[in-house]
Image 1: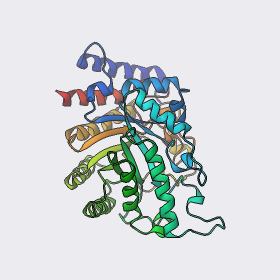
Image 2: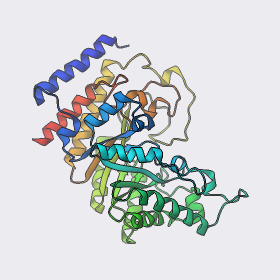
Image 3: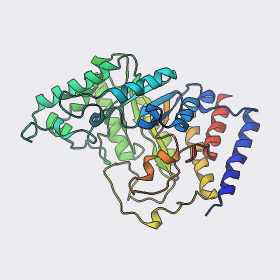
Image 4: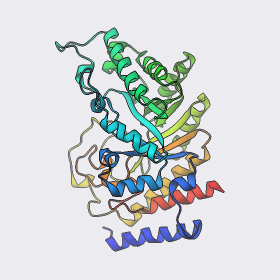
Length: 376
């Protein structure tokens, strides 16, 4: 177990190194990267509404792009037929505009966090293709249309693929058919022709899933569907995926002619609780001490591995900045990371660049170091 003052010392040492490298004033992430690529962060309701002052200070200082954790998901913004709830999403967009940020809309279509009424009639029966297409079009064009010219990029379809690269047999797919993805992109493009439209998914570094995603994107492009970017979520561990798999995946999408957004980046430092690398939010694993070994603090050796992991990843992202247009962290500090409760509730995880007190960890300075080297 790491003694708290030693953990603090580790941060100070890395900070001193950064000051020596970058000058008397340690620059911020957005200053060093200069929007090439955009450096983003997912923000929650407390940060959107201003009740998390510490989180907001980090967001405003360090990042030039934002994504909403939940404020624009269907269940949040369109809970009942004909009823839209825009107060939180309006505040989200206003926040981004106030701070001159690149604003991402996440997400228009997902098989989770979508109310049951979307797929059923008043008797509880599944609706037909035409009805669901009308509901999809109404939702997408109402939401995208409201923020036309203000939200620069939309995650149009989220997590449509299985691990083997095949299409998930969601209710979207079963009722509408496999062309539901194309229709979603078409509706979004009609609502805002200038917005960057993205397909977003996790574990695309998995060769089989990558092959399925490449085939899907290629087919959509050949059909003239306005898909412009792929979101590689980036929920990774200290060891998986390999750096070669990460780079190969970025290059593979780049060869198709689409941009890549590292859209939901974090590094899970805890023992694996599932059989494979995944970000399936429906998974749940029973808590155990073996799966939560760092409840009192992250050991120095793991802190160093985390810094090295982020350093290696950013070397790849910045080497291919002609393809990678955005890197977005999924959460502001370790305290608000979803990985504290997934797939095991109540764990203490350390996946981000800022600790529970909002202080930069060694990984933060490792990213600054790589970014400053690439800027020369």
